[in-house]
Image (cartoon, rainbow, N blue to C red; front, side, top):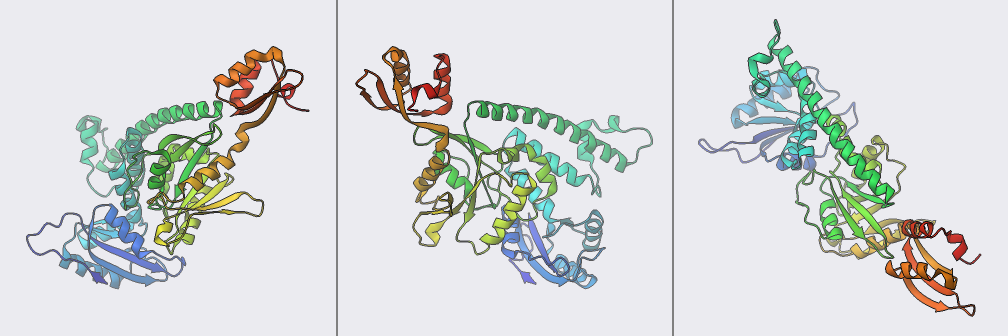
Length: 433
């Protein structure tokens, strides 16, 4: 057990928390103490005690054993915290029993992450998604009075004849969930229209994913010259952001910054944020951002790939971006696979070192979407030649002995095909056979 800054009498104890982390041998899981503390810090809470222990399996009543529960009760009496936070998912019964035993509010890992998300949501969609996740989580743990929900829906007028308080609370939550689902479906349709428009324009989407606090938003800002909020906090970015990037050879991509993943990401969040995470499932390429300086990066890589797999995006091409090389005193570089395809880029988003190498890799990856080559235009196709110049597609020109225009061009295939179709021409007619 560890104690931290126990407040003296008269001092503010707002958001003070006792942390509990157990090692469960039957599950063979490894709990990350530092990550748990970072989650608590990101939620705005202050640790007053940190309790650890080990068991073969969770206790059905208190999750921790009876002896540990008594120790925890003593710590709560001495520190008088606002909340006791477990780095585990508790059943509704365990949470209820612990609150009764400790006479203190108890929160599990899922509730903690939901609280952080609630603080980070900025957009209307993000707030709806968080509320939906919270309501789904709360619906199984109606252990307190839910009068705030009654006030939202009109109080006594909403209560049916003969309903108990618990039945009323459940019905109110069910009504609110249906309302949010309806609104999110509308938002999802709007997102889908945007995705279809990008597909029609043949603009590829690249999605930044990674463990929370890996530096995705800082990298996003450097690549797009944006000012998306970035901070040394878990889940600093919640609302997805999309920006257009112009690459070499007239290539264009849409870069999407998404919410960070984490071990044991609550199912309620995955379900609520499915519309947002669809930017990842439908991306043409995933940039998996990792903190190269973090000793647990391999474990985090597995966790992120598990979430990607659960979203059905495991077949999407992926390039690893090893961020924060400035902390390793390394130089930026590109790693290639046996087939010569880029597999990993080492860079530092904070110092802007190696960003150009990542942009180079993206240009290589989507090069097949741009036509770069020679066109042979008969003198009669002077109008087509003028159109190509208007598109700024001609990089070099000469005249053949037959008076033909020999043009070296670089232009998006979609745009070139559109121009040729209007002129009733085919690309094969203008290239050397």
